Image (cartoon, rainbow, N blue to C red; front, side, top):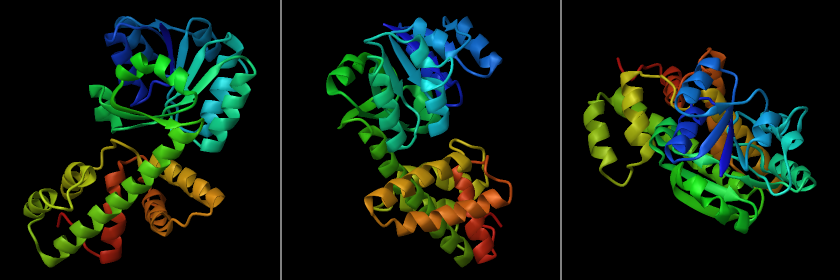
Length: 294
């Protein structure tokens, strides 16, 4: 199976490497020449356009920032569909709108191209380790055919239903994530202003009922004021926007997410949109007039 991979950012780069390690022939396309050169040195082939990627591939994977990016790469001029043939599979592993996902899938179907939406969770560390959680929507037979590809990239792989259901599952994931991050911020801020030793607080709370991935991984970074991005504030805001749009369509109230979006917006307003999501603590610090590391 020849695999094309488009989008070689913080997530896409290690994912492409894992496909190479899994024995797949991989053709890559991206904006950063240094990354392309690195992957070519590891055994990949480079293409000059998404169309050329498709011409060389049985399966094309996209890992891009947002809905317009995926739509442009797949259905735009010199895009994937222009180099496609009937029976080819496109797997979008970005996090985008379920509605746009369905739109792209319908266009792909007119070319005889199968389309799966397969967003991931697990961050850069999961992409590097090949342990991503993958939520897949689309035709179940196509999903089963592509399982060897998914197995090279993740460990928790689940078929969620028809087209768009993978993206919908990812938005549910993000709703839970952002509320968890905000809860970590509030707990640490309360402890900090009360004068607790935050390292001891983290130790006891992570071992109890309040323990979570966010607490264990982002809590220490908040205490250390390490805002290097594993997942950027700006991208988290994009996911929140998608979740709120889906909720609006379904008439589902998401009051907590709406509040967290405003807090993240205040982080962006001071120029921290490219920092990690743990930078949300800075918004709480301003409200409490107290810096937790002080």
